[in-house]
Image (cartoon, rainbow, N blue to C red; front, side, top):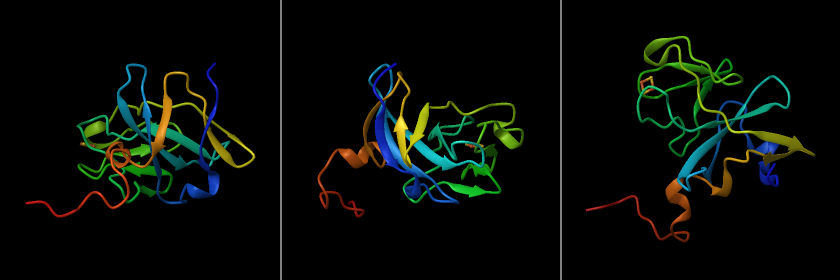
Length: 139
Ligand code: FES
């Protein structure tokens, strides 16, 4: 097993949203992962930040929509169980989100998945530039 890397304090995972970070997968590709609340131990789950139906992120920077323990896809509305990652409704019915192994120690969420290497918090593009170097306005 690889070393566990601290991701965030558990209190940074919102009760009805998500905490987004970027990791490198086994092929070196930058992958967005979300931490979401789950009522089962240890209280947090980590899923790849993408719907199984189409290329649609759950958390585009403002946190994923989570209601009644389910992550809601913003594109077609399929709902995924925040604890199991499974979906039994809508366009993504019959699929499950790829999970990422984590652990919680002393209220710190740790990345323990040997297939992923922690890169930075936020989305894939958030790590490219320094603060203030990006603009929301483009021509
Ligand atoms: S893209 Fe998520 S349900 Fe269609």
